[in-house]
Image (cartoon, rainbow, N blue to C red; front, side):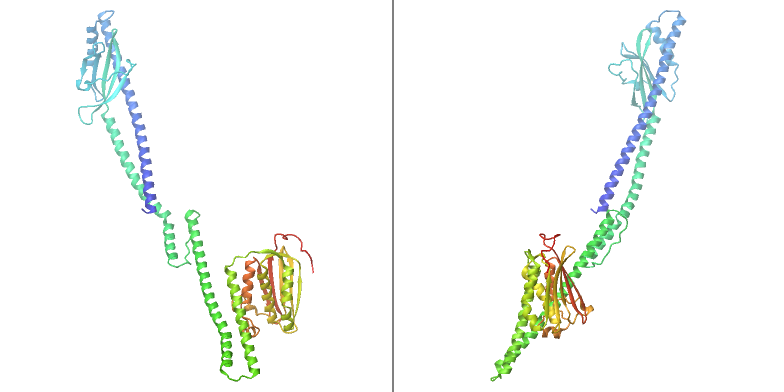
Length: 489
């Protein structure tokens, strides 16, 4: 069963139940009030008849000049009074019962008094009345009883009052109430159906949008109307669709980057392998190779093999960074930077460059070998971009509670439009010069990953002909956070 059907049927059932209950209570209250009023009318009429009986007996006693009438004379006077009562549409039957003998000595319409009501227990003198059906269809009577004392003898006066019109009226009211409840229920059902359809209409739009999203239309957006729960659901669906779309685009970018990565890797490996195989074949096929050529061939094979080794090493390090879980421990940034500067000393001297190291003694949570690889790659990139006789600088300081590391060179620089690409694997601004210098285009990509796993940031600022400044920022170790550096150079 659909949601709208459940809401409609349950609400309709509740509405019919409440309407029926209210109508029933109203009818019962109205019926009780009418019967109470009719009973009071009958009792008043009954008291009037009892007064007539007593007055008739007293009148007969006065006529005879007696102190008290005999039983026969009193009953004769009562019969004469009752005979004089006209049987109209309301008063339809009379009976007078001698309570000592237990049988009526006077009765009009005996069929109405075949079963006389008894007084309530403990209240033999109380007036009682009850509803009795007549002999004909639609004929109902209110039967009343009242004690009467005539000449010291106890009698009970019974009277039947026609209430058929009242009963018919109550029946008509019950039928009208049922018809009214039915009409209100049908009208309410129509209005309720329209209301449920109107309120749940956004669900249909959400359902359609969910189908479209499941079919791959992740840019689908649901119109948000109002501020109710359905509007919240629509906003959540829009956020979900946007998140799915973003994830799909991210996966597409990853797939495209992986495709480019594999293509670049194949190209980068093909070039040195071709050189190695070509010069190896020359050495193998030529029977006599002059020493100068042999040395040249060996030099090319050695350089290309070193290039392959560098490529495989950096690839392995880059792949390992993406899946490894690192254990970072506090270490002195100054010691690590100075160790890297010392290891690069011969290479810098061979390139004719001067490297200055100016670092505060800051404590960082780091993997020492990876951090050395980070600084080494940044300095090596600067070395490859610098001309002989140039200068490079490595500095570190504390700024706003963070360690800031600056790597500066004054080389060729990077075009501004290329800055957002230099961290992509295998991307090289000047491929010929980079390959000649032994580069493979993985250094900055590796640096970016190392910075990421250490919770830092890396910014590159470069201008053509002026050089490049790489700024690294890392959180200080918990042992030193908020304190002063240990020493200043």
